[in-house]
Length: 109
Length: 111
Image 1 (cartoon, each protein chain N blue to C red):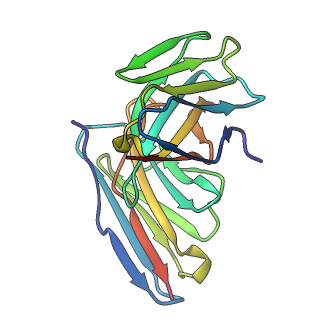
Image 2 (spheres, rainbow over the protein chains, first blue to last red):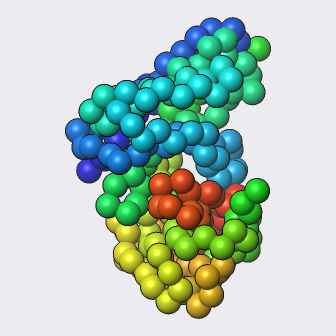
């Protein structure tokens, strides 16, 4: 059973476009993390959100935690080829993380 | 910066061999984790440890064991490697369980 569902699974866009990826669950989490992973490397932590309704910005990336702490979204403004990668969300509860399967983003120049 | 290192980036082993994957972190983190990552399945937790000599089973512990003799080092052991253990293995460490820092991964192929 997958606790966290990410959508879309694949996203291929042109440089300069905006995009949103989603991370949904029926479970409540005490925190939610977003990671980015490049081919052949380990995931790198981008952000942690802990409060329902919280919004965090990291340059062109905006992260939001749902009011009920069950879901999250990642919005990228004016995507660049350097944003290409696998975006993973992970929910924290009961002393561990549960990962979604990821959204593979490709940004073409 | 947190640094998590894994002993090998690529490893090729034969079926039935005993395989050791080593992970070392330099930030005095209490918690360490082993995952495997397969296409379409995401990251699955194999084992984790909250302290030296302590270990907890994750979601897929069968066929694996772990050792944590020192705080900075967490080893994953495949007692008798099988072809279905071909995968990318990722080690992570954290102070709090929810902000994990990952190593570069070991891509293991079992022939």
